Image (tube, rainbow, N blue to C red; front, side):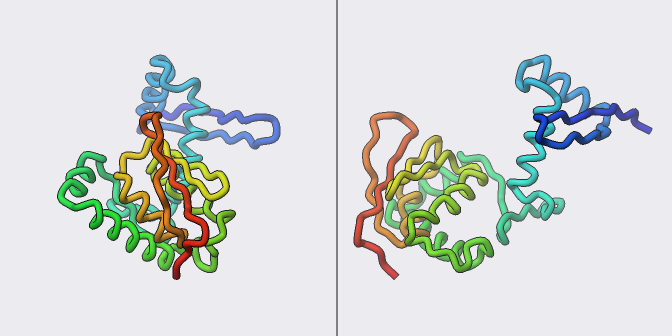
Length: 190
């Protein structure tokens, strides 16, 4: 039988304290991460892990089947996705993304009844994309700034148009890994 260490998760005063037992293997791993300075503390790493557990809805995950927001999640290296996109034209990528956004609006229970033509509701979608690892998304008025995203621009543009019901124009950025998409006023469609 494995020996377990007690570990206290200490949070700020307003938060609760939880005591858990972890295996020697996990304790050794956390110790390695801490000594290598990949993490500040074991407590912080476990707290962050629980945040990801919550964000990704991992309570609904089964071996070999990962789910999030009513859909199945597939984890794959971005180079595999790049190979797939390489075989498609920009128009095909755009159309596929737009169709994907339409399906997502219909199948995600969190999106039902939400009016995404109202820009105040866009953060619901942008937060989901961040949680799924697409990159960092921020909204200002009718603009979406995308950082650290490995998906091609036509895919993002098509996804935004399908999801939000506006035509988007990409504003060129001189900063690498940043794209800004601006919704054209009065261009909403069904």
